[in-house]
Image 1 (cartoon, helix red, strand yellow):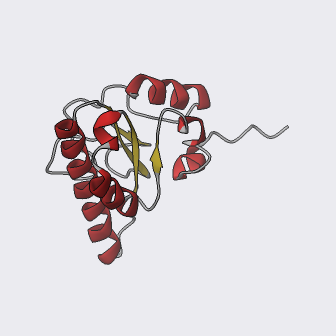
Image 2: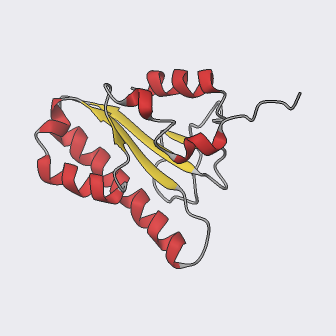
Length: 137
């Protein structure tokens, strides 16, 4: 899933830091998100991605997404610019965690994509705001 997202963003020329490992993304006190754009200090979009057949791994990913959504909500309450939380997930592990899926859909405000809907990721999220503008002629 991560490679597909990276390819999609690169093809659209949407900025993502090349080496996101070890960064703290949006002031997070948790492991860095899988993707954030345009940068870690002022992200517009944060993406968590996972394909898993294991429901324990799915549970852990959902928990991470819920923590990011809580951080977003806290920023909004404080009147600070907030980021959009996006989940790109697939696999049997998520299918068996129906209640978690409901919480994740609410927390991401419907921004959940699967392998089949990944083609809509840019158009249906704030990533579209980060598309390069064509030069004036």
